[in-house]
Length: 247
Image 1 (cartoon, rainbow, N blue to C red):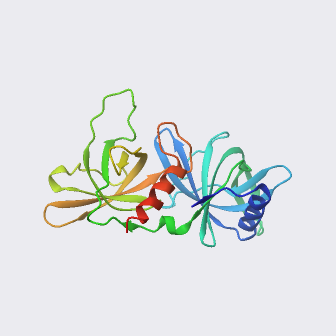
Image 2 (cartoon, one colour):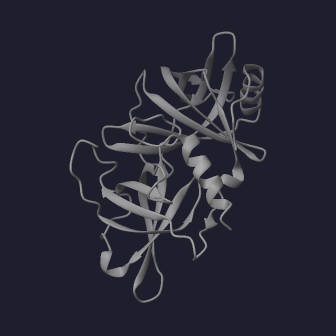
């Protein structure tokens, strides 16, 4: 279930996150596509409506990306049995000394206008019963332009799913030969009469399902952001909740 905390509760959550130096997952859209980074809370100034975080780094500790003023960052962090999410723009980049006198690179963000909380169990994968068919299609490079004619790479059924991603079951002869890291558009439909879930995902792995079936694993990208033509995080969360009820 999705919750939108009241302003006083949201302030309390951010104060807790700063006090605990909570770890943050950061998502943002660049010219090269969606990227996921790691960061940490440093300060919260509720009077000025500002948050300070360490400059986000790639999980593989590669060179940090160039993040610019005005860029919208998707922020997510864990708090007890919930996951907190919001989107906030960058106000400025600042280099300062930490508690030990060492220089650190930081970002100043606007305090979010809206924060959402999701039960962390929404990120636990649920296996789809064999007697329930949930169709899934893939498009190369991301969600296609609705005005353009684009044929899907392949189609199949959902094997398991969570807010974090989906495992797609396909015939082996439909293997799209993706490379790890490739971005695809994903459409998931329970019934032909229902509104499909449309998101972008990054290819992560492939598993064998017998001699003639493959399981393709995808991580969902940028769900914190509201993007035209893609399903909102609220819609995906409700979809996952209904999938759990199938068991």
